[in-house]
Length: 433
Figure 1: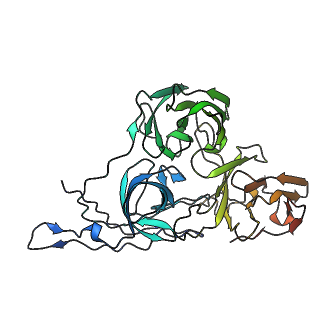
Figure 2 (figure 1 turned 90 degrees about the vertical axis):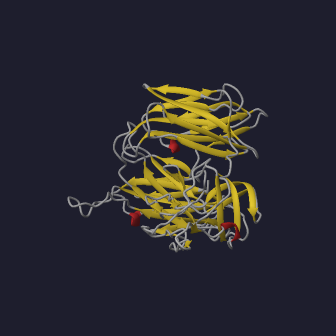
């Protein structure tokens, strides 16, 4: 049977400051119809594409499973062109460490583990798949993944059960698929190459989360120690290649979970869940903690790829019982750590405006930024004292104050490892872009 991929769309993108659409507006040409016969599609293999590849996307920052740009793509076959084993590909989803996620209809929406054949052009080191493609006559590519026999695991918390199973492929590729029993929302698949992964999946939608699954998967794992808001959990895989699955009730944020993994060779790995690197900051009014996250730019070195700026955002975690939302988010605050040793901004997040509250008051004052390893600490002084901030796992730092603390009253001192300091007084930030 003739296989055709027909993607016709009009770009309807909501742009936010600091964000760009992943590609230009679509311009699709229609097939030629001769004498009332079958449409004549041009052969995409004769098109002027920079690359034609087959493979599977790997885990990374995502929006409900749709990977953000650039997504990591494991190439199992180069049909045209050549390059490394893992390449960055463009995506319809532009995720953010702030509160805005942008989706451009009609473009490639990769999900971890879903096999794909891409006809792509290269721009700044990223492969952008063709948005309008007709007439791919070749059979669809076969998935390199195979289910690991007897790898099913199950766990229950507060009457809510999850199941998971492992998949494995060549080149060190492995995936884990998890889903809640008897429910159609939640779960998904995560994939990695050559190293173990930690995944956090939620059962339910954005508003109501009934349970959270924590999964550690990979080969050569001897033991796992999880750090969770419910306390430490120690576990061992039933056998090599079988995932460790633990289910907690309600909503547990990925920033609240870490894993210490001991491998068969005796080495130790500390894992964060797939996605942005995160850290937690206490709330000054004893509410839920705040999650800071960093998008550390474009880490690939493919062709002459140009690194993006780094961005840091912060958001208060949602209620653990799965109901309600957080009071606000701050950022993103962006800079370039290739050019400057640090950057920061001072934000005052506000609730969304509505008819009843057209000009909402700030809910907090948030200092957030990022620094190179040459920075030992960041000292923030307010009228009541000082806080000493250290770099998080991605180099980010954050401090949250009551809204009554005015940004102009804060003094930020950057302390370098060589003992030198730089102080900023009464400023809303430094080295931002």
